[in-house]
Image (cartoon, rainbow, N blue to C red; front, side, top):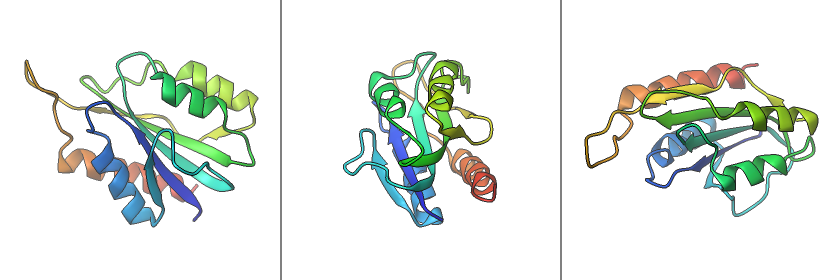
Length: 138
């Protein structure tokens, strides 16, 4: 399958999950903005760490997607409560550009302490991989 696993996170928490998707799906894993643009991808998995508002780099990247670059996109979000709010406007923009959104956005709640960010667990990674596998079979 022609896919790409992309991620954006200030703390680096999304990168291990994105790398695992890349390994399992046998596709390129890169950060946003990617070193090489998407060209003819069937699905682009986008992992982002956010709380309510999509980071600017991810917003700009997604607005530039079109059907020749990617047929569809699948989002997964890491934050303290697993909330995927903040994606609706970019999903609407991508639909206007002709890019599909596969499945529901997956929210992963990662609990942290008072002074440090939480790290995703192996169970979180497994949950994302199962979700990605379902999307790949669509």
